Image (tube, rainbow, N blue to C red):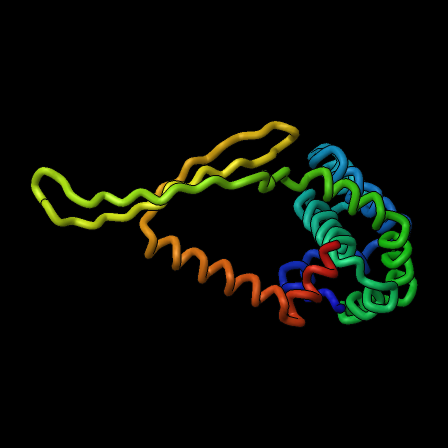
Length: 199
C-alpha cells in the first residue's frame, strides 16, 4: 500500500533535499520528540538560525516528516512500499535510505505513541428494552402510540454507565437497517483491507 501525499505535504518535504543528511536525521529526532512531548517552538527557531532559513520553513519540514512517519506507521507499510512512496518525491538515493532507516527505527515507538493518544471509547456491556403502547387518552379514545425504551449499559475505563433512549418503532427499524447495512459493508474487500492495516 502506497502513501498518498497531498501537494501541501510534498511542499513541506521539499525542504529536506536542501540540507545535509545529519540535519534530516536531527529533524527525524525532533519529529519523534514532537510526538512524545508536543511542539517546542524554540527548537524550530534554533534550527532556523543555524540553517539561515525561517522558523516556519523548519517547522513545515518537521511537520511533513511527522506526517510521513505517522501515516506510514499507522498503515504498517512495508519497506518496499515506503521506498516507493518516498521515490515519488524525487529525493536522492541517500535521502531515501535515511528516511527508510528513520521509519524502520521509529515505527514501533510511533505506533505505541499513537495508540496512547487514541480516545478510550465506551464498549457495550448489556441492553434492556421495553415496548410501551398508549391505547387511549382523555382526548382521543382510540389511539395507538407505540414507543420503545432502551436502557444501554456501557463500560468505559472500568466504570459502567447507563444511557436511556426512547424512540418510536419506525425510527428503531431505520436504525436497525442502517446498522445491518454497515455490517454488510464491513464484509467488503475494501473494508477488510482498511481494518487489517489499522491493526
